[in-house]
Length: 261
Image (cartoon, rainbow, N blue to C red; front, side, top):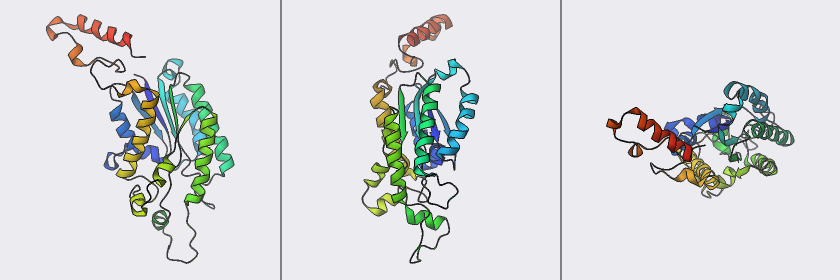
């Protein structure tokens, strides 16, 4: 079965946390029988560290040309940690972020030449106060310095958009979607700690990703048993059990030849 490959930081790694309606888990549910969803989310990583790790991920998970042909949907979500304010050890200057993100996209393009859907997600906004409290900062101080700010994140959103578009990838603007929630309390509810996503936040990201995926491959929306986007036919298309294994195998092979790539 062809694959949807997700690459990123904790926002991707935690995307399978069903307790928070993980967006990656929802995507896997949407694509059942059509695409295997493979996650390479790396908590705490930046564009620099992901670029350094990527050759290992590609070499160990997709070492052959045959396996590389399975990559059909690519999703890259990196930059939330890059945008941490100095002197954070995770901070990556925005100019360097552009370079590293571009290198990641180029590597994925080269490794998965048959991919038909390629998405870059922008870093989301943050709840500055909630994250500062989580980090043990006294936010009642007059001149408190927040470790993450939306003013900083916005620079990385612009960079991700520029790089993604220049590489021919579809940009999914998570930041704009979250900032469109104008009520402060409602926006805060998108996070479980100011940075990582709550159930509401994951639901919102999933809807954005689903829209982009189905816009690029509309056939994946067809849930019918006979849909040729499936990797195998629905059970109602199979001959009666009494027919034996050979006729059943012939139907399965014929179905796959029709549409599954």
